[in-house]
Length: 256
Image (cartoon, rainbow, N blue to C red; front, side):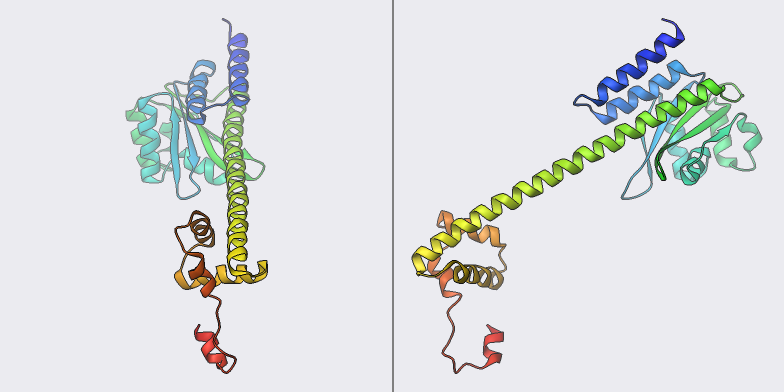
């Protein structure tokens, strides 16, 4: 299969994955391997910003590149970190010439057998969510064609991450909505039970529910469910609203 056919096959495969029920970790690992197959590089890795903390290694094409990515993060030094912070591509055609800029990183990179590094941003408009990092065993810049394909692959990775986040956010909202609806139903059921047994209107029984929940430090939904299934006596809840004669002082009411 020729280079153009390989390129088409890679992007078709990645596009197919994005419209199916995909595992984002698997997709990113495949993408790292596509970089090695399609570009003039020996290894690739992806770093992703963790909303709760620093950058994390999420996919690599080899163990050597994974260790180098971790080393870079541990020492807070290297082109991939600079790329993430600036949101712009950082190209190092010859790492030997960057020893003054990143001395620890350059020494480790050379020891791993890499001579060039190219870091491409994963971004959507102004938001940078990570970097795609390409490691070469020969010194030299990326060709214009490889740079364009590399950035396109970084963009695919960005879409994959953001789509998964959107799906998770949608699922969380749907779950929260369903929980709210279920809670509303069980509360209405409990109000019906209390209204029937106490001869009160709905506003009065809801006041009793809230008082009892507050006095016993119980969630309103849990209390309502317990009333419906009979694990809490309705009479106890109804008694929560009884007041003393009107001679009681405001201070007494506040204490209750």
